[in-house]
Length: 193
Ligand code: FES
Image: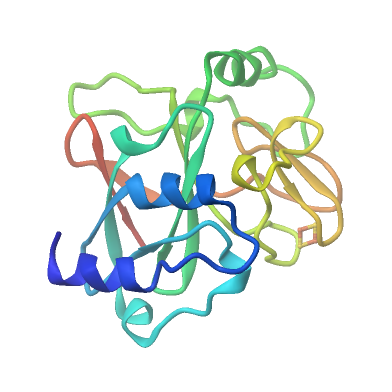
């Protein structure tokens, strides 16, 4: 682990109430700093960004370490991002709903980024971790609440996102944003601010 990675691990101490399972998932996820430092953490609301994380502008994430059906949460420069490994059922549901009327229409594939070989890996979905209503951080599988459409739920005012991060119910006006990111390899993504 790099020097910066060590800092991330230090900042990654389990907050009160976190389950051991959550912590193991996060600890197993490999997040490498691509700037100054990056942090993966399960409960965004409970940790304020350290001074060094504010200065980070990008982070590399080994998506092969994200367990199927779970996600990791990555903090870059104080901004949260979700990296989710979708199950077969979650992927199928996302595609099946492509043509359902939505507030912010988008196909599931349009929310993915191509791998270096030009193909897609629909198992991995990467989104912003900010609700598009007023900027709360939705809860997801790690918190045991995925909302009525199986993706994320924002408890602040009741917005429900589906397994593609599309807004399906509640006051949020837009889908969870797809951040600027690319595949550095078949298993590593680089997310940038
Ligand atoms: S901030 Fe998410 S529903 Fe209001």
